[in-house]
Length: 387
Image (cartoon, rainbow, N blue to C red; front, side):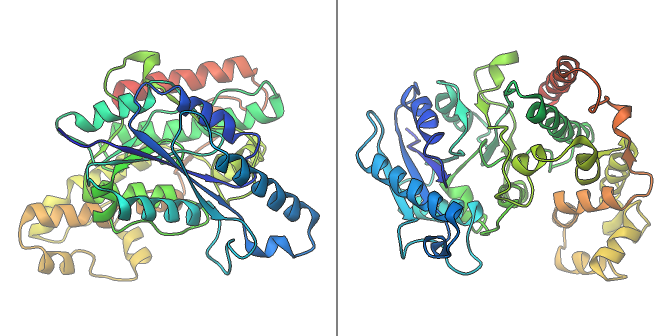
């Protein structure tokens, strides 16, 4: 029998109010073979930099550590103290990416079984009582995935100032994923640190995680897409039952991009930072991928060739790959790894005709929240059909 012990990894900074709710959801889990690993963190300099706000965070983190050390009924909790004086972050390595890396590395190095699961959550994420059980069923399925990008859903807050940009951002993510699914991209996943899981074996094979201050979840999932298989659906559910993870939609400026900063922006600002890309750009990516077998035999121009020559600063895009990969299958795989999720996003941004105006999808500035929520739910249904 496969050992599927789950290690739930949660970074926490100033989460004294929200983390107890996440832990309460873990207390209700139907699957019980799991432990919880929490990294309470902030820069060490915050204790003495004279900033009253920073010092208040330090004190609340200290209270959180004490509360966790007192114990939470029904949960095996391991606390990683990156917050107490002398234990916090120093230098450039800090933030949620560093916290996740510390947690993932520690759990992976101590795991008894490579088949054990790492489940990544945020300290303000809510989950269904069946989430861990459904994850285990998904990893036990055949073929077994290396990672899961779980279906997610942002619950509205009731505050229009927050909910309007939240809906716009979620629609952006769902529209982007829908287009990647439509063209069969190997990078068709939405990377949310609060809604991903993977085996210890996959994490080690991918070489671990980079300690970035933002986007660390995307780059890790991209590694899994290159080294294995990412599942987008959970076993044992249909329709609305698919969505078991509910990330927070609160405003946050702790990271350079993601849900928190996006919600802090108005739709006009989001339209610049998070545009809806035209389907024609994705079609060009699909055509480029379809030419990879031909490129093994000879050079041909692809829709992305000019962009790639500029981006990679080379006139010989495919020659080195042919020399290093002597079979068509390995060559095509190397091409797919080169034209990865990041390159696709960069290419779409580079196209002068590649961006749709928001009004082509919905009026995110003036439409009622109810209508925008309906549109979000329509995109979700389409997405679940293609996942």
